[in-house]
Amino acid sequence: MKQSKAPSPNSGQTVALTGATGFLGKHIVEQYVNAGFKINALTRSPKTNTDQITWVEGDLDDTKALNNLCKSANIVVHCAGLTKALNRNTFFDVNLGGTKNLLKAAKSNEVDRFILISSLAAREPQISNYGASKNAAEGALKSGKWPFRWTIVRPPAIYGPHDMEILKIFKSSRFGFLPAPGSAKNRFSMIHVADLAEAIRKLPDTGYNNDIVELDDGKAGGYRLQDISEAVFKIDGKRPRIVPVPFPVLAFLGIFSDLFAQISRKPSMLTLSSAYHLSHPDWAIKNSRRPVIPDYSPRFSLEAGLQNTLEWYRQNGHL
Figure 1: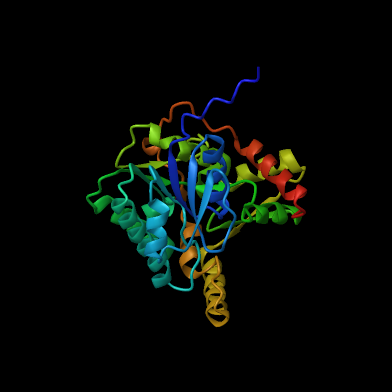
Figure 2: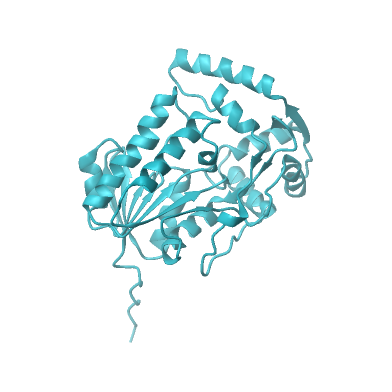
């Protein structure tokens, strides 16, 4: 006689997720679905529901949609936010204002846990408008009196399938060089998106309550661009030369790019503000903030992660 499949231990748990259609959000959805959770996912455009995913149409300004999103949810994962905008106010309107709106909805619906996906940029709010807005969002969570436990997650550079930023590195390497903003000595941490999504899913099982954690692939001290160059050589057979781009040059390009963005009304990733961010010498995570998560360790080393990403680019016609 055929045995029925045992129900998942998480089948009664519901996650309210913002940013579900974005780069990281897609992988978070996959993690929770595979673990047997139900998901209420915020979306700007209509989507078809499944047995496990209920799409809630709306945005971070829509209080009714946010209440529907959090209804019956045990966990809220706030992944949505702006990484580029035409001005500082727009960053704050979405990254701070949207977080405040979601916090109110989470409180009203008595969720158990709130996970805010922030950024290492929040450590240095004076450097960029983006970092300042993420720091302000963290402040809104830390300063409130909430009935739920919360955790702030500060990822470093995230890469993997569906990411278009690391694609620029592979394309540059085809021309034999990698630009180094500010200095080739700058350090930065990295994490594959699948590892980050898994860590986020398992965080509620830890004791990191009302705390800030920083996640990476386990490489203490982070990387320099030379490490990226060597990894690209091992997997793609090309060793690109590191070409430093001094801050004054990057700042000039940022001012020009920002001016064009204002004229076209289309935000650019490179602005004077982001030039300061890109040139910062240390975007490596702090070991003291690296969490210990039960039954979790990063699966992707830098080389393995870049190989996985490169294969996805090739399969999808990007290279």
